[in-house]
Image (tube, rainbow over all chains, first blue to last red; front, side, top):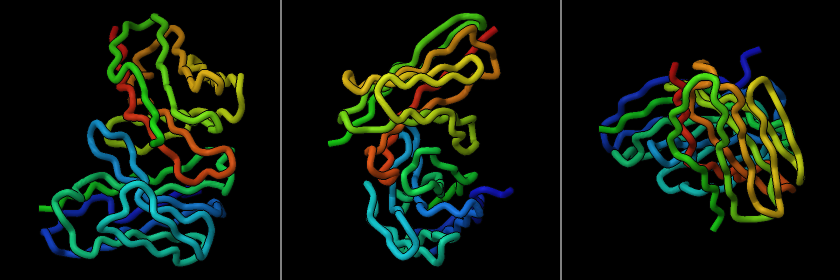
Length: 113
Length: 112
């Protein structure tokens, strides 16, 4: 039972490079999310997908795009990485109503130099 | 603006002692979540509190929710070293799990 799987676990990018963070869940959850975690700021929502075929902006969407490829997969793309996007990125999934909480992936530690 | 405020931000406590972490949030129609994060690790779900007066317990941790006061508490009983971690509270509207808003976290250090 893998839960939520994120790849890669670590990545170093140069300013201006692009990359896609991958996320897949095997719990048949409807909703998926991308968060970033910065020191002293908790987790902030970047984008979410309440159900397959829909995506919406969260608190800090600038500089990111997302794709809900199917019910299992939700990817996050940085088109032109900036040092301010250095962070730990977490993908999560839940049932639509959230009554059983969220399941988080193991995170991607991204450094932009 | 939706806000979730935790206090204290850092807590150092001795093994065997009791303490409470407080989580204040800014709207009344919320559900409340508690998570644990070990250094360099992901977040582990501890509790989901859905209604006023809800109380849940797991081992030495007990969480409660007072929606009228917009307050949730995480009470630690007879702390042990294994409870050392960062604890986050988070809220979402009752009608959807989307837009979960996190507090800044409480780093708990349990010493011998």
